[in-house]
Amino acid sequence: MAEKKFTWATGRRKNAVARIRAIRGTGRIEINGRKLEEYFTVPTHRAMVARPMILTGTQASVDIYVNVTGGGVSGQAGAIRHGIARVLNALDTNNRMALKTNGLLTRDPRMVERKKYGHPGARKRFQFSKR
Image 1 (cartoon, one colour):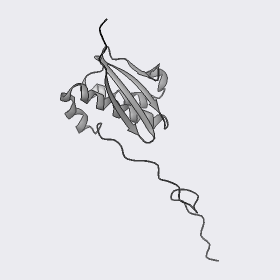
Image 2: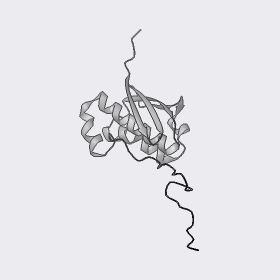
Image 3: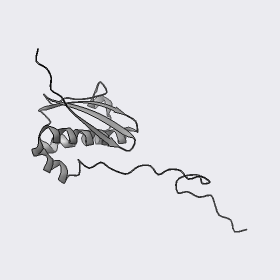
Image 4: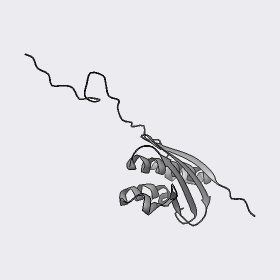
């Protein structure tokens, strides 16, 4: 029996972490054991996840298997996109230019600002009364 050769990568966004396995195949995307359409019901998130494959023209030649945890739906979609871009770069370095110019290889550093003590939120303050 021939052994399958996977390429691994990790993608992150907000508090979401996506572990990506890629193998030469037919363009199937499976997220936590479910199809892409079942996992992401919003078309925007589906388009976000598929963007690196469309840019590199590999949507019909690579199978993607994803394990994603943490964060919300939008953060998970961003983490998967980041991971897919990294795995496509690892599979073929000719993809790097297309991915880099569209900003898909850069990890989005924006995180939720922490709540400060003595205040109701990160930036919100209690109402000030002079008298």
